[in-house]
Image (cartoon, rainbow, N blue to C red; front, side, top):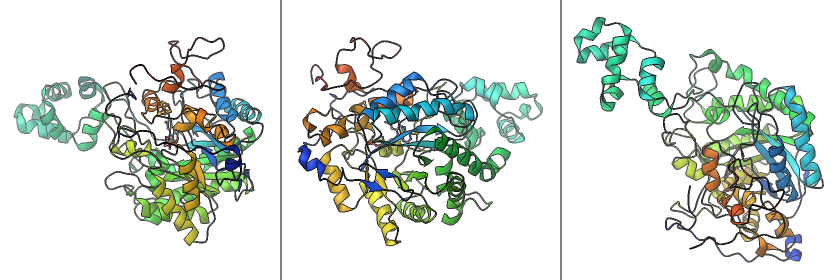
Amino acid sequence: MSDPTSAARRHPLPPEAWPDAAEAACSRLFSPLRLGSGLVLADRTWVPAMVPWRASAGGEVTPAVLDWYRRFAEGQPGTLVVEATGIRDVPSGPLLRIGHDRFLPGLQRLAQTVREASGGRTALLIQIIDFLSIRRRPERSRFLRDFLALTARHRERLAERDPALAEAPEPALREALCALDDGTLAAVLDPREAEALERGARERVTDVHLPHIASLPAVLPGLFADAAARARRAGFHGVELHYAHAYTMASFLSRQNTRADGYGGSLEERARLPLEVLAAVRGRVGRDFTVGIRFLGDEGIRGGSDVTDACAFGVRFARAGADVLSISRGGKFEDARAPKVGEAIYPYTGPSGALCMPSVFDSEPPFGRNLPLAAAVRAALRADGSAVPVVAAGGLNGFRLAEAALAAGDADLIGAARQTLADPDWFAKLRRGEGTSIARCLYTNYCEALDRQHREVTCQLWDRLATDEPGTPLSADGRRRLVAPRGAWRPAPRSGA
Ligand SMILES: Cc1cc2nc3c(=O)[nH]c(=O)nc-3n(C[C@H](O)[C@H](O)[C@H](O)COP(=O)(O)O)c2cc1C
Ligand code: SF4
């Protein structure tokens, strides 16, 4: 994991002139906002979804999930978005789920916990997600001996090298494949097979030869609508449809979606299923339940969608009744690093991942890096006569930066994920004029590295305090706090820092 004292850290935290309580009280950041659903947000502060890997193996809310969201709610942000939560009733590891009524009691406890801890100030949304199957990277010989579906093409290519293999039985062909060096093997396999070997097999929305992929447009509107209805019954103020990053709905929006069944190709066709999902959700939950959409301002990959697509999608989502649009960036599988054998590919490890969670190790500073994308989408909405608010995120870590973005019309809401992870009280401290006591995120992505390994996400700053006070929940190895410290605390500098 990254060390914040490393010489590779290129961008120091910018100095900040913190407001006093009077200045904060009349700021844009702490002014209310009414959404089209009628929900009034207490202010413009927004905590975007972050998966903390605290759910049970069956996707249930656990006491650790409640602790995690209680701690955010104590900081009383205007809006808190619960992590990406699966809409299907299928095993998904320790990812929170909402795909069946049995998840309702846990989700009700979660909504109630946030209501109580925030004193009713925080609007609570839950991000709902669909994703396709990805497999772990297989061990080479296991893949060639057990998983690869042998075809006539493999036989032909092997026979070109050794004519005796033209009639050989299948086990002999598999042994011949195992004996090839990597370069030759890559020429014998087709690109998807080579990908399955080197990165783990990954389904795509364009795999329409698979019945469950072909039928996604028939199935997903109902699944999203059912999930949204459950969110409403559980006591959430709204849902955020996850149309961003590496997952199913973002893949429909992508320029890489070449489906020829009316759900891919042109911009209109790529937007069709996302709009049908929105319509189904709205039809189920009614006009007075908040429905937001998170999508990409730019996929950040070769041949992917860019900000011109994002502006067009934003206009269509707003016309179709979305209450709020949250703009993210990148986070794709296509350019992610190959995982180690036995691990699954993680969409935040490549260049597009760095765009999604910008860090101080990048060539550009992370602070407010993705604001231009939110600004472009917002400008397109306003030009279309829409007042739908836009959330920006990406290195938003200070009062002046937030105020300037709001004043310039770059965004209507200020999303801060890692800064709120580092110090869940930071918005409250700003409001109280206690900015100097904020624990500032270092943007070194220690938390993201834990997320990548599906380990309980924590912040490196929390552990620079003693971890032995009674009542401090700790990770299984006893070395990391599971929630941020409470009260006035400042991370101690590292020795040598
Ligand atoms: C640990 C972690 C988990 C995340 N999980 C999600 C998620 O579930 N859904 C999502 O849309 N974004 C997720 N993100 C991305 C953040 O919401 C946010 O867009 C990104 O971190 C950039 O904002 P920031 O610079 O304020 O952190 C996650 C980020 C982190 C650090
Ligand atoms: S939230 Fe904590 S762990 Fe994550 S980048 Fe910020 S300082 Fe590092």
